[in-house]
Length: 222
Image 1 (spheres, rainbow, N blue to C red):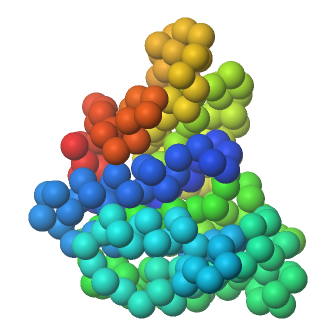
Image 2 (cartoon, rainbow, N blue to C red):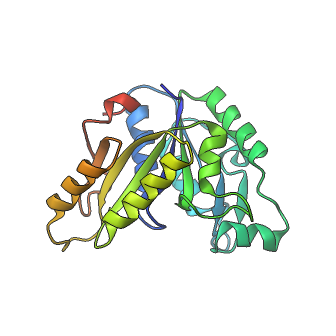
């Protein structure tokens, strides 16, 4: 079993941080040392010490580590990472990210690594968010926001994960639309088509209480 998981999503704002924090709390409840990492974060509020997702991951885990390892690349503007990196004149270095991950993995039993946006969010002119998962050799967990259009977004993301050679470890159904028509049918369609198990379901307004699914056990969850 991998020491870590890479959490990505079908878009930005789909619940990646919610899922990553749930993973950390689950591991901690099992008595494991758990730490969160966001390799690249863009968007830091004025006066804040770090990005709000990075702060949430730190609060959910039970291992302390310097910010430079938990968030190797941080940019103030809330824009696409490759744009923020170019404006700052700071190239996003996969070797630096890998070193930071190895430090965290040496201090913890489990590491939840949260990406930014979706699988193809650019890091620079050549690389994207999936390159981080590949550089760290981590299984990918896909967070799917259950709303109109989610089937296409989820299937495209899953196809990208597999075509790039990453391990598709599982997916999470996150109900972000309380009035979604035929929600169960949408989940069933995803289960029929996605080549990985559903590891959790998050009901509307229940982000602190995910229901772990049949695929959770293989990832050391539940």
